[in-house]
Amino acid sequence: MHVKFCGFTQLADIYTAAQLGVDAVGLVFYPPSPRAVTQAQAQTLSAALPAFVSVVALVVNMPHDELVELADNVAFDIIQFHGDETPEQCQQLAGAVNKRWIKALRINTDQGDLNSMDSVKAQIERFAAAGASSILLDAYHPNKYGGTGARFDWSLIPQNSSLPVILAGGLDAQNIAATSDLPIYGVDVSGGIEHDKGKKDSAKMRAFMKAVKRDRWQSDAILETI
Image 1 (cartoon, helix red, strand yellow):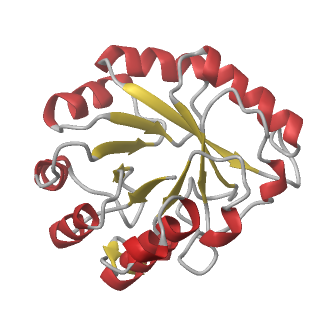
Image 2: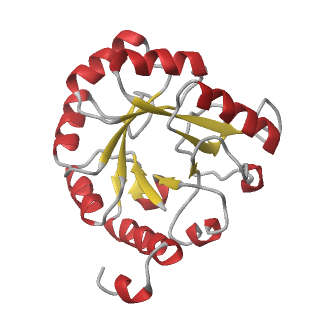
């Protein structure tokens, strides 16, 4: 089980996440978000991470020139398109900066194109065909592009997805065990490890990682050393 902690703004939190063995950290480049960082902040945060911890740049409908500038100034490994980008736009934008990418789909069970397992699977296939490395499934909100702490109906996650699925939305140390039987590759958490937006809680980060390790791929004996 792979774990991404998202929405970092503080250097001390980056150090803690790395020490806990997180696989990836997300930096938000969407100014309306309370977790947004500047390029200067991102440079400092990214530089503090050791090798083998991926840096994910979360962008929302970012224009081509802005993405090129971001890639020129900030060291990151993967783009997370979290807006209304089409498969073709994702492919073109990622290709312009030579980065791997993932796409976030916001699941809306009430209306729209993502309200059934078949519709979710079909959308995933479109992004797979465009070259996505994974797909991230999050809850829909009419006025926000993520980070709401809300969950969607997990029964809509396809069993045979054409891309590895990353689950986001309302996760924390208390409910992560409920994902153990889901067909997912990884989890993405932000609010569930915070004491305030953009400011992580070291105890919550530790509890989340310990819960994931226990439920997925570690023994209790090994966990006692964490």
